[in-house]
Length: 111
Image 1: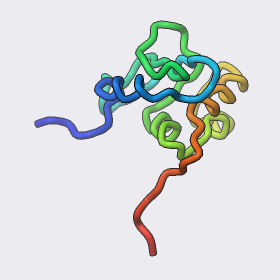
Image 2: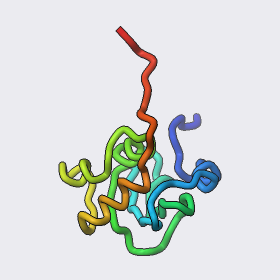
Image 3: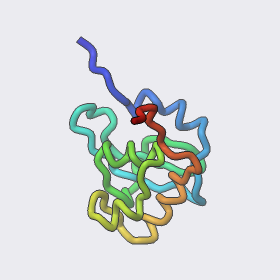
């Protein structure tokens, strides 16, 4: 049986081809209990996304990372609430710029 779900590992080509915002790459330690291949340190920024071996500046679970990737949350708000951990407030601001989008998530469910 195969697992269905989102995988950072298999989506690297997609992320590499998309220039994210910000002025620098930010290393993020990702924890994913369901798909362990997503775990580890990833670098996000204007050069795309890749695995990294540098010291992480932020620590997130995959659920928070997904919210950042799809524009549902800002890193600074998640850091202020304790949902993600960053090494400084400046890093949270850098992540806001890396994941900034003018498009908001859309649900086709309406009442």
